[in-house]
Image (cartoon, rainbow, N blue to C red; front, top):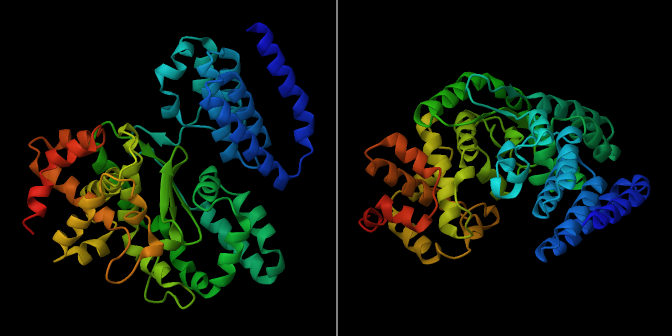
Length: 429
């Protein structure tokens, strides 16, 4: 075992000088290739080789978000081999070089428990700077990325030929870790697509500029939702909130880098120019006044790490519907009022179609299916079904606080549906 470690370390060190001279575009390609090789080793339970290739993939990655992810996979692989040195080295890079801050991912005794008592592990944990807090009053709200975007936007108007490099340097690379997270995980890390999309929607973006700069005007409402969540779910965690500008494909997300809201999708007003938008893009625009409800929705997603993994439509609908329902409890409004309006008088039809597919891997046709949106059957109807299931569960519960905690820790989605007594009510519509 000692010899194997020495050999692996020699191979890693010998490759580093080569990787240092690889250009960014090729580097990302090499990174992805190494990651795929690492996954192949991991599936074979060859954890030492998986850990090595994951680490090399991280070293070659072109941004901190991918580096974080791949270094963590490397640490997990080395932990599978009970390789303390490899695990700690990978996590050290993730934390101290790339800003990894997901303490919940490290709270896995089966994987990392053999290191918990070591001084090196404790030092690593102290080095993490999480973007969440135990008190709702300590969370902070930021719109710096939005302001950087408009500085970049103004520069692009004077030099459209270099839009990609301007947005890359002055917006993405100059942004918060939250923006980089959103760019990689919600926009695919595709700078060409971002610049191209914005070039096609110039009138739209100019028309929403003033509203995007007012995101912090609702800070008192965000704080109220944070505090209300503490009241109904005392063990809640409260992440920092970041506003960014996206490309109209995702209104927000939540994760270890905080709550991330794409304000350009939640800022519609009577003066918004939608002439350049596709019909589905128009459909997904939300009024600026809907911003507090959307923040509340994402805040609930941040609490859902204790829920069971599942690939069924039922799980996906409950996950999103719960965020709408509990989000409504803490903010006073649901983030998807349009679905509530559409479902009136159509409840039974929606439920029967949903029930026929709910135990299948069909979430893509009910959640996040903007490309299937049409007037007679809008996208995201899974949100409405999940909302109604969670609402029924909550209404039937005697202990409301207990009901909230149980929702956020579901282990069996079919049993949760049965316990909600929703189906009996649905069939009477």
